[in-house]
Length: 193
Image 1 (cartoon, rainbow, N blue to C red):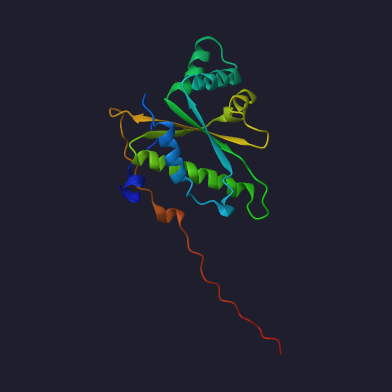
Image 2: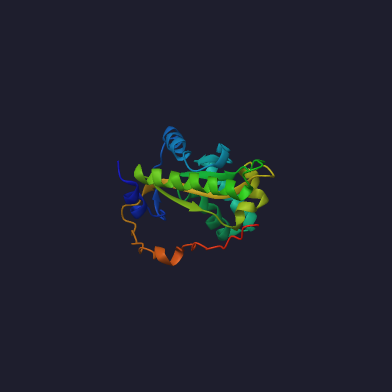
């Protein structure tokens, strides 16, 4: 098994994905592992929607409708949902909880998608998380069967990586620029006499 550090170093969003995808059983197994992501109170405040074959075209048509596209522009808009053989819709399903606010539930859903992306990479698949302003469009929400309280977070496009696609190096970031230390504060305690 590849080490986690190697997975993090080598994973890239797959801009070019070929027409081969994990089976439903494989996706189910990988998602079961991804569900080990941090999730305060184990709420599982999310659901995933599998789109294959004609279901992708339904989504593409909804995207084109939401955009108000016509002619060739409509075809281009609808084709966006066909860029991968498998799309996994990511839906936040917030749950009322006295100790877990919605922002934390969103973080849990994001963690599951991050874990799933790493697991797909380890299994030899490519993925890219695509979002955009149309996730809130009525036409798109209807196709994705999103309930009023649910939030569509986009789609994980999944397939076989194109071996000829460029693999850009990602420069190592300066972690120190994003890390600070809270200094210990010395306090003078006055004792009541």
